[in-house]
Image 1 (cartoon, rainbow, N blue to C red):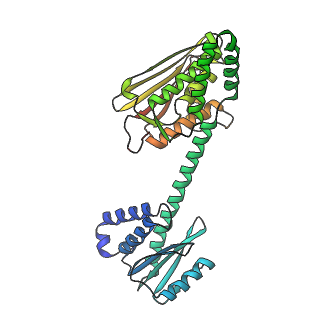
Image 2: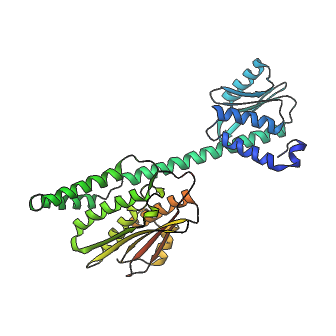
Image 3: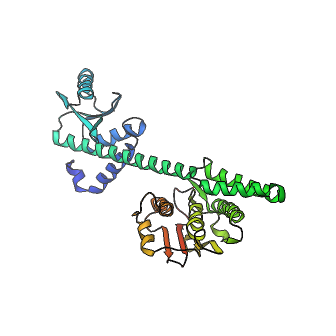
Length: 348
């Protein structure tokens, strides 16, 4: 990047300024952050005057103004024809993001075209990054909405059938199970925030396990233990219940006889570690590795559940965290969830 000699001598302020400009343009070419970006961009490149505009034509200006009539005419031309515009002492460069016109950069003064083009490239890169981040966030929100809406019809039918069968023979238990079912559906379907706490996740899985015990009867044994020091740890919403559901549906139900699911949570130094373990049918360790690497198909229900949780954890906490799967065919499955006990920006 060609900048003023003083800037070339010390690249750190240049990089810091470019990073701030990128952050300011995350939401596009309008609003106060974009206005700050215009000021920073002008100072970074040493332009006498600089303007940014989106397709609405609203101009965010910094520094020495250009001739109003000339600027307006050139700007109108570039926004409608998508061709570079210019006039004496005014240079206008269109800003294309993913081959679509997003706005324009205007510069006044004696400015080299190559330097102005570098400034435009910086703006375009910032806008592209903003769109990518917005797309990723929208995808994550859509995935979470789908997860909230996903409730096994088989489980719902069986749970309601069991409750109905107890209405006459054991009305008190039927009432308790109906309240459990209401709590389970409320937690699964309600509009929660992006994060919750370990205590709420454990409460949800205890409710789910109570309903599954009613459905499976003596075939299912459960054990749930959680250390008090991790109850307030913030975690992404709905990261434990899918693991417990996987343990029952794909571990315990396919096996004959009685099976056990254990859920334990404890602190290990600065980490919160939660174990979801079953003594069910297990799986090939290579398949478990493929699941976490995203190499399974969309028809692999068990794989999608594990991969979904692992991806969400790594997106929030980084590559050092997420799921570890220990399994063998016929020897059950142990899923280990590891997250930091404290993470900036992760609040319930």
